[in-house]
Amino acid sequence: MRKTSTERFLEKLGVEVYPITIVKFLLNKRRILNYFERAAEQDFEIRVKYTVDHSECEPCIQKKPEGILCRQHTSIDRVLNANTVAFDIDTNTFFYKNEIFRMVGNRLVIIYCPHPKLITGDITDKKARKINPITIEDPKLTGLPQYDKVKEFMSMSLMDQQMTCWFNYEFTMVTLPDTREKSDWCLISNR
Image (cartoon, rainbow, N blue to C red; front, side, top):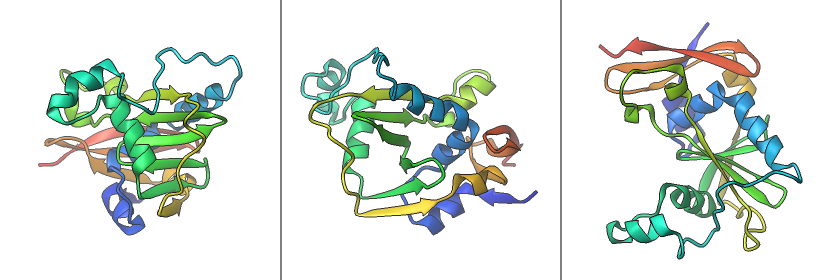
């Protein structure tokens, strides 16, 4: 089975998507698509309510002196102000930086993919696959913006390959295709 550099794949695609975002999508594909399906249900309950406007968000107010937004509003801002995004035509899903996202009815679902270099303690499967979904339902949000450029790809073709990406200073992560909807992973030494 051939190994493909996720970094090179994204360079050729010409998008600003972090390689770990694509890899985490491949590792969590079924779970991510399930988030989108659940958000479409009428009785879906949004536990933590976020709006597009961050002016009344307490964590954003606390971070204002640093000139940054809270993690969730950073993702919302990125998704709504991106210029060039990647689009998986197999799943109708968009990608930008650390975010995987899609409009589901009148809700915006964003899956934030934290980088594994932030892992503390032991490296476990749960920590390596970690993703954080948020759902925004805001009357001011009627849809995604018209992006300047949308670069299309097919995730099914990536599911059949061993995709590599930088994991941390010691290791590179490699996806291990299992099925069309699931991948496992391993680490190989950078030294």
